[in-house]
Length: 467
Image 1 (tube, helix red, strand yellow):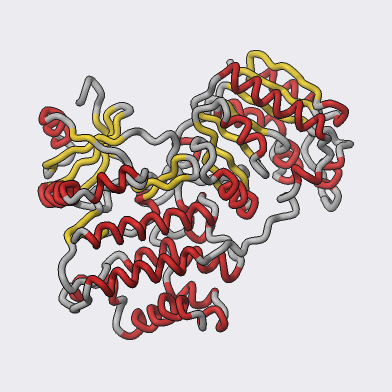
Image 2: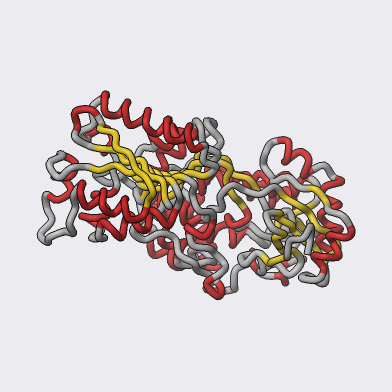
């Protein structure tokens, strides 16, 4: 125990035998064995980490007391050094990041590899799971993944970088195929053979694609992947060649743009029945609820363009903006880049949110297990869940009540143009959907609720507080 708090292992931190993460209450502690500790101290002494920290590129750290090291050693017997990191407001995964965020994480990884190489070190891992986001800004969190550079060695993490960063970005940019489901279904990323089948011949003729996909495919088929083998440590690859590789990868990644098209709901906020008056009222209500509750964590479900996520971010601790439309979320990520650092845009389908998965179903945690929101915004989404998703309205409200204690939900009446557009081509009946049904469900799960009419649109906002 530390400070009266029992220690527990981070369930997703086990793949590196020399380093891992444990929790002591709300404290995040990284333990390193003797070799990893010596490398960390050398990287620190070289000034690499201080420089990266000044740029906001790596997570902060401080060493803990010898007594606390001894306590961690009870869980990890080889522990020689323990670092404490600040707690992140919300953990997200690469299969939830929009294109621009995955691209930013890739560029950050390459920047850190270049800085490490220049000082005589290298990254043993090049995984996006070593990166988290503060708002839309990437930050490198695995300070145990540095290794000493050995003269003549290749970058052993190159293949991992391709599988988990470059290949998903290429598939999205060149073929317009969202990578989110592909990454969610494969913890090790996209293999080169699969990417080769997805890309067209003209894509493969691009110099960067030819080198990183076609040539790598040949190497895998005929002689194994060069960049992933320990026995090539004496291959005689000069450091300047590795630096050129990093520069080339950076140029390739920098030049990519998402090719995924927005769905027909992508412009919903602009093309719906909202008037300027109703939008203004809606924004004022969001401001009022956030000001009254001062929530540390807000979820904006079905955020669309993120207009009300941005409004909530003015008074909340952190806002997680969720939408299933990858192109719309990507636009939001671009819009808030360099803006408020507390808005995290994620590609998540509320009808199929990220589940527990990975080793033993505990390596990657389900969305709701990473921090329940203090306030949930469900604006312009309820009718989609009931009509399109075929979820009974009481079940939707019960789920929302389980998520957080405060709710702001919008009711779109059945004669609204947005509702009529949704049901236009439906051939089957949908569940009961009415204001009376909504109010009955709110009364069952929440202590109080209030109504605000959105001007002349006949839409209504309900602000509810749970029992």
